[in-house]
Figure 1 (cartoon, rainbow, N blue to C red):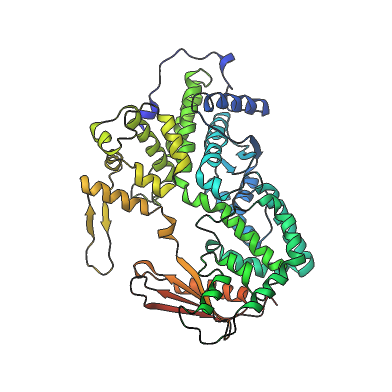
Figure 2: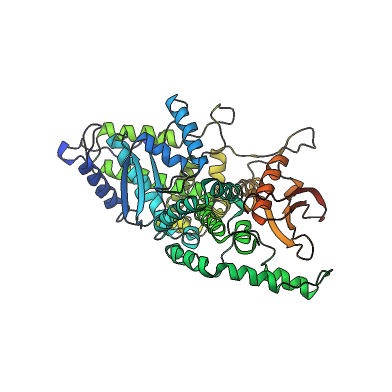
Length: 523
């Protein structure tokens, strides 16, 4: 990236001005680096962040963090050990590298950095994680809406100790069965729309004690008050009352099972709740990968350049930074063996730079496409607004410019399996730009990517069979074997049979039907 190599010519910094010399560092160096980055992030970039907690870890500890989805403490499960063994073997053979850092959305914000990093890389990852990611976590509306940064560490400590107590009391195998089933349903265990009250993770331990004392009566009362009338027709008050009591249709399957499954014990419901709240915690991260990495990459780029211009980085350190930065934002071509789709670092950083260009030096085309921000002059103000108020899908749909589409050489191809040839649907013209942007943004829309599965009814007058519908968008059905296995886990948790009907949303026709009978493994 030639533009990233340009830099204001200045006198060589004196050794006394440098944050460090050479590759070695100690904790006093880390402190100086943090303070120097903070002096740029606040006054110059206008960032706002949680207090930082920087932890230095080894390669093995980084692999362990990979296995436990990056959390500082977590409950035990066999899948984490499996992932650790796989990744460690790949790392030892040189088939994979390790991240320079992992950052936790918590208050204080925990940044894990590798002890093998050079002093330059420590500067880069602190600027990237401790200030870039940290600012995004604290200010983006999705994280404000769905996560409790202040309470998450206490909740993870509670979850770990609670599951350990369950293993001691009920047996390792019984707890593992519940966790296996809950993990299989984890992607269908999130609320996708705001509810009346955000979970207060800090109060979960108190709430768990109350559940043990009173929870079972609630479920018994619910089943006892359900109407016993048979043959209720659609629109019948009895049917409507039943669906209202069970909160149907319900897209959050783990929530439904936790509240309504008739045969689960209180400790099993609590484990479902733990897995559900962890899934909800990660839900915003799935929707903001491009924006989050783009924000952090743009911030570290600005901070590292500012430190260099102030004479706090040597020429050698600056060149090392540029080499690493260029590798991070590299976008392989489609025919490259390393191609795996669009690199979120590359796309995010390119869009942040492009927005700054539009704000500070717009073309006539930019003024037509972005009249609200073109030429306003304050790039960081616009970028901070984007980081606070958008997710990947809406951000790309709103801010991907024709210039960037040309630079990235994007075009829209339709590959219909029912047609003998591929069709170019959109090219670089006014109509094509808009169509490409809509299509590209949709690739980051979880509502488009995730299967739309809901619990729609329960046969209370018969065998209590649980009925689910999958709205098969474009008549695309689930992979048969995966659907069968996950539905079996669902039936086991429910305690009775379950049926999943894959429905064409346009016609209402049932395309495929999957059935599973409950196994008496939990009871």
